[in-house]
Length: 159
Image (cartoon, rainbow, N blue to C red; front, top):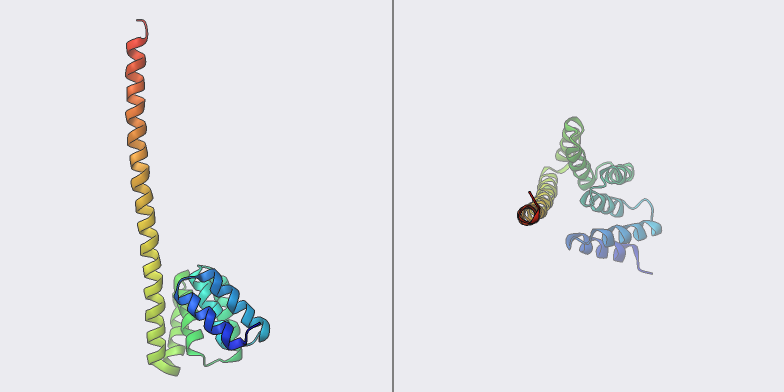
């Protein structure tokens, strides 16, 4: 069994390497040692955010803010989660709160989270576009085969 700091450090490394499931597991292990650790709660919120489990992310950020209401990372993370949910009013509220505490840290965290989200969306788009190309080719092959079959049958059938 590792220390709280070991779990958090390893989980953060996994999150940065896009091993979201592994990060979630290690943050949860850290929280078994200290259920109110704001760093572990905020990290778990970020991992849930990356996994598009936005309700869980919001819950973690809110728990972190109960422990430390001035946690800029939790405030800006909460704002980003609200932004992804399309909740403009709550996003603005959380971003303003984070900026009042530490504008530079909040700006950096928000920009980083937005960049990761946009990168993930672009990767998803590329996967879908690749699948669309594969499906287009399957449709063309099917149509060629169907035409060949229809021609063959029409030649062979008595009139």
